[in-house]
Amino acid sequence: MKFFVDTADVAEIKDLAATGLVDGITTNPSLVAKTGRSFLEVVEEICGIVSGPVSAEVTAIDHETMLAEGRKLAALADNVCVKVPLTPDGLKTCKALSDDGVQVNVTLCFSAAQALLAAKAGATFISPFVGRLDDIGTDGMDLIADIVQIYANYPEYDTEVLVASVRGPNHVVQAAKLGADVATLPPAVLRALFKHPLTDRGLDAFLADWAKTGQSIL
Image (tube, rainbow, N blue to C red; front, side, top):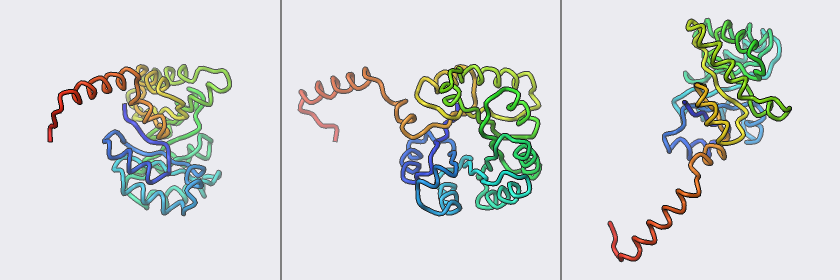
C-alpha cells in the first residue's frame, strides 16, 4: 500500500518525507488556506519536495473553468495530480485531462456506483471518504471492499483506490487488508502507525540494560 500525506504544511511534509514512507501528497483548498500562503506557491513547493503525485484541487464547479484551472495546476510540475469533484462536470473534466495525459484524483466519492463512473472517465485515483461515512452510521470500509471488488472485475480500469478521510490506524490496516492501493493520512495518523506500548516498553528495557554495562558504541 502506498501512503500519501493529507496536508499542505510544508514543514510536516519535509519531516515525514525524510522517513522514506511518503509516496505522495493530497491537499485541498481548506488545507492550503490554513497556511496563509498562495495556493499555487504552496503546491509548487510541495511538488519539489516529493517525487510522487501531489493532488491539487480545482475550485470551480463548471466544466470549462475546472478544465482551465486543472491545466494551470498541471503546468506547475510534472507530478501534479489534479483533483476534481465527483460531479458530472467533474467527470467531464477528468476525461479531458486524462486524455491529455494528466493525472486526476476524483474526490468526494461515497458510493460504488460513483467509483465505477470515475474509472470509466479515466481517473488515476478515486477517493472514497471512509471517515465521513462512519460519521453517519455507515461502515466506510464496506465501500472500499465494494470498489476494490468492482475494479478487480474489470482489469481494463487502471484507477487506484485512494482511501481518504482516514481517522486512525485501524482504517489503514483494514484498507490494506481489503487491497486498497493508497491511503492518504493526516500527519498525526501516519505517526500513530509507529506507536505500540510494547515497543516503547521493550526499548526502555534494552536501554536500561545497556546503561548498566557502562559501555558506548561510539
